[in-house]
Length: 264
Length: 302
Image 1 (cartoon, helix red, strand yellow):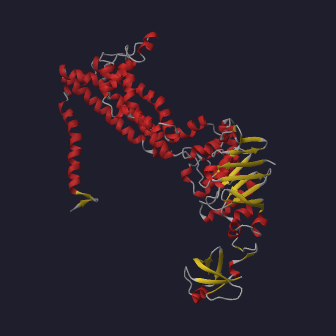
Image 2 (image 1 turned 135 degrees about the horizontal axis):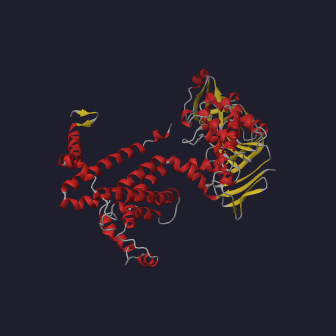
Image 3 (image 1 turned 180 degrees about the vertical axis):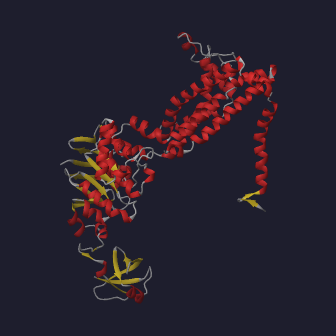
């Protein structure tokens, strides 16, 4: 059989079908865009509010992913404790959990009737169906991406540079800031970008736990879904905006994963 | 005395004791797995002993109820690989130690420049570690280790991973910076021991089996390992004999010791024949006349 660079031709044929399967829906969206109304559609008050809310909540949840995900990855990669494998499996659970289930789980944790609900009610904080709920839902589904990416990078990097730094007099905290984190910076950046992308696209957990209140919890995916019934042109236009944002994110993640960028 | 170590690590089968005087450089010799790395690990704080203690300059590094973490020991470790931090410039690498101990940025850089000059590496200051050769990187690593002004410097086969052509220059640098410094150097190279160390200890099976001034230990070896390092055979009666003074024959002779050929290797213009713990060097023609092969029965005279 003839081959192309060692790859059998029939594999190339199937690959083309697979690639078309991914690319064709993008073409379909673009073909349905009402270009004459595109600018007014994406600058309507509702659309802008949803886009701003989406970027804001996804940004904050990415920060939360970093603040909590980096320590989790460090503890998983560098320490040893009983039940570690179970903890690792459970921490990554949101990756495979249906988002609706994640939303219900969050509702029964932070909702008024939830596990921590009375604590927050006592403090006068109402989490469910607020912007905070959107951020929590997005963080919940996005944080495994960061943890997974960082833990792998930490294991690959090993601890030999950290040992050297310690014998040079650097305390564990100094080692973390000046050696560990700079060394895994590429994974840190690509992990953060992937988390941001996952947070930006969050739908199921958000609508379950936070509802769809314009300007408060109605993020772009929710807005698109609801507009599909009443104003399909607006839904398609906003979808294209999300596609554009996603392509930018994928591009950045690819660059972020390239360590050459960190050499002047 | 400045350093005393007496520690046991059951999981590694090590029971090590050692004393190093102030300003003394001690070479640690031993086969792979003998316990040399365990000794350095104990002193650097990378290996926890089951019992025992280590005291440096009157300060207990570890002992019953005491454990000083690596970064507070004042012990620098230079390994086979330079392990320069790849994200920092050469100058920032050398300034890392002073910075970490709270010295200000300008003072740290000044100190780093001084140490780079000491190892003839000033020209590399602004380079990235990836732009250095192995020998250059190791010189920078020496400067980095010394810039912390350690009370004790540990060197773990610092030249083993380098191209042989750069070893003499690096050895000269080490000779200069180790003068008057309290240091322990693990090495496989007897030249390092002779040129760099005041004293030698030999480790085998997790224990110190020989110790003394370099020339005494190596020129009058008392262990087969030390004898092999200087290229001598250690006889059962304690005498030593050079492999070139051993004659081999394939028939029994008066006063000869019988044995079986275990290995044959070509060394330059000689062929080294190994018979048990003994080595004999033969001229190629003599070797061909005997027609030796591994497993052959031979008789040795010395």
